Length: 129
Image (cartoon, rainbow, N blue to C red):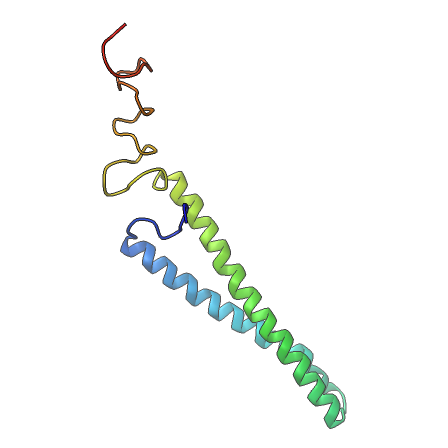
């Protein structure tokens, strides 16, 4: 669990964005599922005179396809959001260190490499050479 998405505290804006994205994922997944049911089940049932067994078969196939499409759309939308969120946080440097602890440069205070004196020389701490 080295790179958990939920590391650190989220701001209210980030929590709101997650809530909106979940709502969008649910609405768009429902729309996709309803469209599939309309095309696979309702379309042929209205256009053709089908037997009862054929209608039941279409309903079963349409329901299965709709459920699969619903889950696929939901997962895809939320996966893309998570990926974009990780990239955004990495670009801001928030994943590099502790946010609230003041370490945002990969875990070293002062903005340098571990052991660097911080004077721009690139040499390890201690006396000057």
